[in-house]
Image (cartoon, rainbow over all chains, first blue to last red; front, side, top):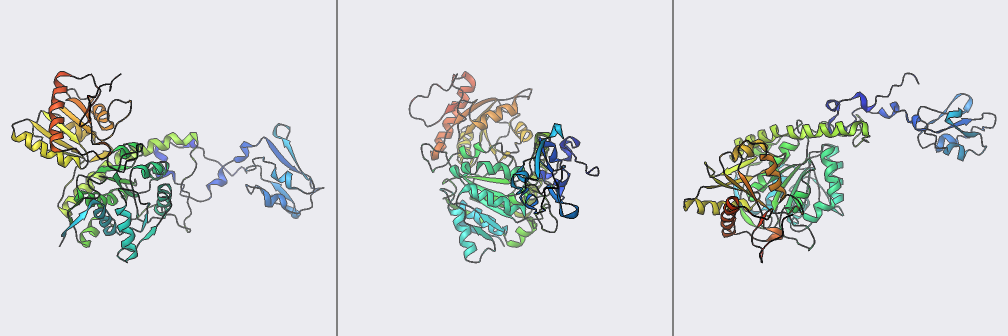
Length: 102
Length: 398
């Protein structure tokens, strides 16, 4: 995650604005740290997880990623903390915890 | 060889769009603009024009479809009037802010209520600040010429702004006049193929219409404003190239017999031709009068206007629209503010008339000139003057 650098609007003057605010390169959303918006984060209990993948399927921001041994983990760079993954988990393996307690 | 044919302004504009070889037309018919999309639909159906005609369900959809069309780099045309332009309003801003060079013909119409399908400039003035390049036409030839010119200017890579071509509903849209149609070769020489530099392409993905949070919105708008004002260079270049090829030269501010005249009248659109006859009559009677036809409304031609009025003592500005509760008609208040910084400026008198299709005769313009001079000399309690209103008009003041 350290290789990702988000340029904010503050890096640009009005002269840098592209015609019509067109974003001329694809994939720029990968640089946006939407994880900043989060107040709660999902924590996965691998003991309970049955690797069904429902959290991965339901995440509206594709912020749940498959990891080693068929498990799933949230990408906290993007995860906005909506809690849908915890809600859909049939094994109650995902708990939403307050960011300040994380 | 060009040919001279009898056409109403609506059909002249449709011919210009055909000769510009537009790729997409998305339009909804509305009086008095109906003949424009009707003629274009006919051309597409008859195979005279190879274009996609999108029969949308509203003007809001018309402009929305135009956004999509322009985004893929297709030459895009639409047309509306009055209430249609109002319904389209939010998307009008989107088109210019996304910098899509759409051309739109407006057959100027009054705004309801009361319901009026007849002409005035209320619809045009309601889109004044949308950052569309806007020109007004005096006659049917200009309806053709300005429509063709609009593609040349708007699509220029140094511009990339949409262009509105205004002509008066009924007074021009439904009136048949001789129009010189050029040869296709000449049009092709004037108007290169559109090469929109940001056309959507699956092989070169990009984002149009992204979110503008507070940290970039202001910078975006300033960039837009600077680019919009700079479009004047290409506007002038377009007028020159048009004149060089077709022999008719246009200007942002067009003086008519103003040589050192003390009293000037400023009009826009078809009324300029009527007013010119009044000017001729007054000149024959030995009066020091002249006319200014304001062709370019946005970006506003400050320098041209100041230059055109520098010898005048009185400038009468004629509006076909009321800015309710404001400093006078929209054109009048604009021009007053444009002249404010001149060390010596003419006294400016505002008139409102010709609302909702009301005719303005030569005699009416003679009255405007006489009354305007009188108001300049003696003053008036009213913020602007009116013409042709039954009953003494009092109460246009604080």
